[in-house]
Image 1 (cartoon, rainbow, N blue to C red):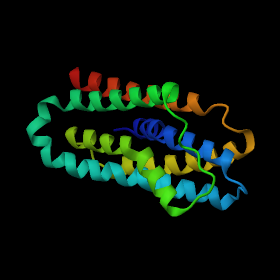
Image 2: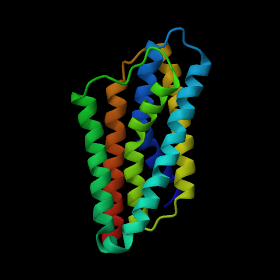
Image 3: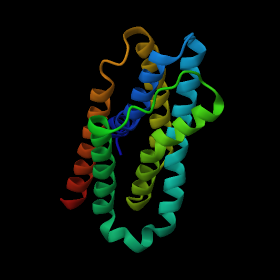
Length: 184
């Protein structure tokens, strides 16, 4: 995968962490820069770790499904993107926190990185090396989460749902791109 593709994938995966960071930034009082760094570290770390878990698990079964790998990758990315869009439009706004303790950070980081686990599985099915995408995904998510927390503190959550919709559309687009690349 190219750097641009990995960057766009990281951007799409980071959108839910960005939205949660942004809404958290609106509710954490008193807000400190350290809070934004905590959110960024947890979200970026889990977004980098979960694809590795998915890749390891997917590698174990990829030989059995290699002929269907592009369709599986498309299905996973389209499902995840669709789920993000659905949750942005109809989900509960439960990503807000009023304080940052480690148990809350852990739960939020796992919840926002489940989609990255599925992406790791699709990487395994496509025999895609994992190191570069994981580094890019983690760094993009770290940066987006940090900026989201600061923006949330500064301007509130005016764009929270729109960010999740854009992330979902990016993931669906990457799924279509993966399918088209392997079909022709």
